[in-house]
Length: 627
Image (cartoon, rainbow, N blue to C red; front, side, top):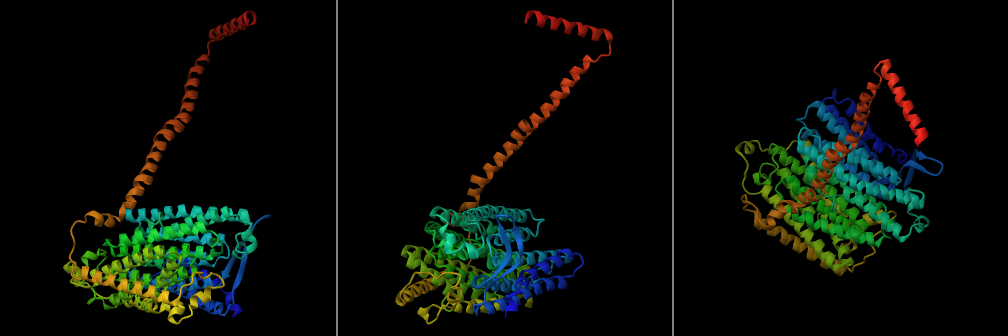
């Protein structure tokens, strides 16, 4: 088994090889070869990740030294990989879900030219490589390299259809907003290095190293780290890039929202739980921001009509749930929800892609309806995803969301009430989406109805697998109150501390009962409200605010974008053109003018030179005798 852990370096190398082959050979590879290479490389990473996971379950962890990345007299940063309980779990999620998304993409992207098809898979492989680097690194520098890598790949993939200006703007928005968060993370790393002298996890999180940090240091470092997490994991105020990321191909949306990029902030805080557990101020900030994000995004999702936008705001809201868990110190619950969310959210995004594929590119749910009879596999699997995210007992989301709610209740009943309300909104808007899309009568065009069909097997097979995982995925965390032993908490215990909040079984039964009954009522209300759906008229009042996403983008545009553009215009038109250019050009014009005047002194006439000599002598005599 030790020989297997020494092969861990192959996990990120496989997708890197796929990126290089497809990137360099994109003009010469056909779709079968380029899609097959990319998929097989991620499958290879998944197989090794599964072997590593099996080894870690037997408590065999390791740090694998590859080479010294930075080495100076006072600083040594190694390029090492850390294989432990937390990293091995994330490796399984990234490579497993990533492989299914690659297989799905081979069919979904079949209309692309060979060159663009290979380029797409090259970017997809690079994305997976960067995320694997992020979770496998044994220190914050390697994490940051992967952190920046997924940011770059998100820009490339969101703006994949770069001929559309709106798509390129969405890509730039994602890139810029992530850079804001990344600066906070980078400053935290520098601060940590300055105070502790190392950024290796095994050294930073020891009692001796933590003792070197004052309370102000810990608060400052963790707040800056959280700023980084708000960017990657789309929390207030840096969340608006994520819904706009829907500009990319649907499988990209699934990869970003389910298995990779948005979970980076959760992973970083969970990895640094020893530090965050000492920062009570930061935990309170995380809790408040997470709760506000969960409620805000859920309220917006209620009135969205783009099938992918509903899922995008759902992702933002679910990430808010994960941050609520982190803010209450329930790190296991946050990681648990990352796991279950990866299954049901990837399922629903790929399901939405199947719908869009059948509708000829249409994404407006108001123009759909009655799709169940034409797309039974997509409909049934999508329903399973809705049941899971709503937290219906027996499905994966029930177990992870119940644990978050229990932690919130133990922390503060008011927080529990607000979190439960966000969960009820989740059930309502997800079943609104399902009912309007798959039930009732078809509201699209005759041509769209004529072409309605179930997606190819390469698209439906990943849906079926993810649907099964969305049902059984939560059983790794069955609580003791339901006769389980919470295997996930036990597995993660060496790395991630379990919540100290303890509730009696009766209290847990009460909370489960309350949340389950209210969720079912919320679903029933959605069914009554939308079973006979007709396209509504112009939104007014609160509905208009929700439809326009609380005008947050417009607020940012007014408060940040327009003033920056005005300042930039002033600097360009006044400071740059008039002052900087004016000064430089003025010096040139002055020298030029002076030269033209002085050259008249060189007339070539002897009489003029004699006259100048006489004038000079007179001036010298005048100075000598009178001054």
